[in-house]
Length: 504
Image 1: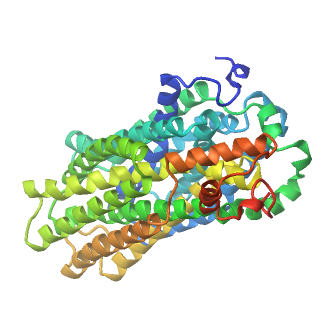
Image 2: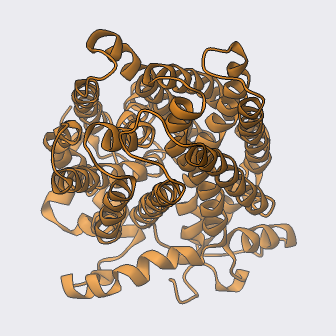
Image 3: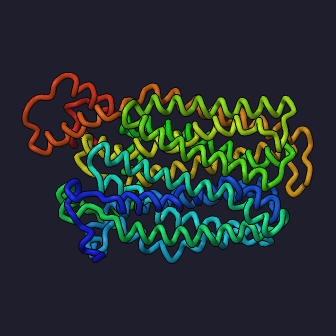
């Protein structure tokens, strides 16, 4: 496929099955790498690398501080590369994806055992920067390639289905490798890293070949040449521009739901493997089987959530998902308290409830994210997909780091001893408290936010109709219902929309 042939008029080029598939498959890297890291890297660091829990948490923290600069900068640059020759030839988004492909083996070198703290810090930071370089432009492409509500929902759905498939692999693969290499072999994780690095390169290549974005002419029509900034001006305006996205009401609420759903899973994932091994008297293989089964259930849950999000309210689907996940956590802890241990078939009950909830919680925020640039366009008259992707990725990484750092700090305070075959009763009770209170508190937060989120298929159609009216010159007077809906979604008075505000 010729590079220049990928440029087409957005909204009129048909999205074929292979475009959906290539877009979705790339989340094998996006979510797959995070599933592997959240499920296994803490256990790997503390069991096979000689790191203390607080050192593992520090690696996450340092990486996120550096990413606080890198992720928003990548989003900002990609929004403004349409004025450059390389951006006009290859694409302002897709050039980043192309450049990241040869760097993706950085994921594999994270999993070499027996190295120093500085080695693990450097390799983790390197992969995180490569990850941001690829995933931020990727997250803009659904909004670039699709215009209507259903197409964007399908993009989100296929993406999360691939994400859950990669999570299944991340759950089961260590157990399969353990059977071949032995319970105490650190090579289990190295081989897993190599396999995933190869998958990342393949799926990123497919994404580059079978995706497209807005033409330079379309971008110029949305953002005229007069808006171009010098490099220094752009850098000075970077954070003001990016965090102005937080002045879009729908995006603020979306972030609250996103954080509630994802941080709850971060806390659960960080503690779960330790909980299975030390509280339930299981093994790494047992934890691998339980995680893999949970991810299979999540895969099914995503398909259910796609239907619910299209036919009902995303907020209502989110609330039901949070309830299911909370039930799973409560039942798991109740069984542990009652003496249920590894090997009992009863453990499949909480795994089922947790998986159903987690799958939907993974899908819904990314389904609603694809419409945030539409809400922003009504406010500013511009398309800033890159800015929103940068903030999303930055917030995701910072909060995941905070969750992991918090879990490791509490574990250390509770008496957890790295490398020990058996943990004290105090350490095990601390793990249970982290798993229960941390997870459920974040779910409650997300549900409270979702009660105020009113973007759905009907309100999105009103939004897009109002954008079309402004594009046509703003003739006519919107009815009271349209004014109410647009003001609720944007957080701005109707007479301030379409650039008549400080953001525009």
